[in-house]
Length: 213
Image (cartoon, rainbow, N blue to C red):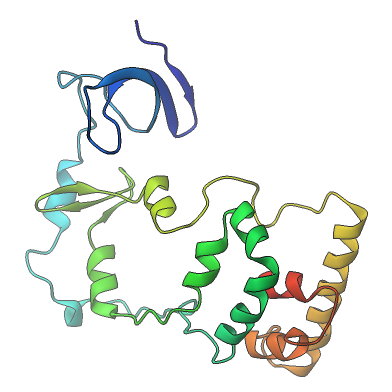
């Protein structure tokens, strides 16, 4: 008998599962599945909007698109960023791993070159009704499992959660004060380059917090 306990995007139930190594017979255990999910091939699945397929251009022609898209958030790492990561890693790597941000910090040192046509071509396939990409060969979307495979944590509190201790509040206030001072120097809000110059190798007791910020 199934025991379903739904919570958000995850459903918990007993199912026959195979071990990750693929050895042995399937064993019925309590497992967690990402939504949406079905328990039988006979169950009705979400019907894709028929009007969506008619709106997908038959050929990929980015030059004919009427929109001009700017990628303000797509930046390559500062030249000294890798050095800062290499300096902080021996001191704080265990903390990063415990917080689930270790791989994400290492990933931030890589240069990911943008292929604009590829990004826009993928966006062209996005369906807001199903929150998925609809390709000619089928449907796909990004899940928490994909984030975890690339080393990004899907657990914990939001980054903007308020500090809960006096020490944390003082450190947050110090960082905010530094941001305000840098805003007076730069025409742009506390840009990354100035932030690094302010805190990198500064010996400040909040250098690690500034690094993470």
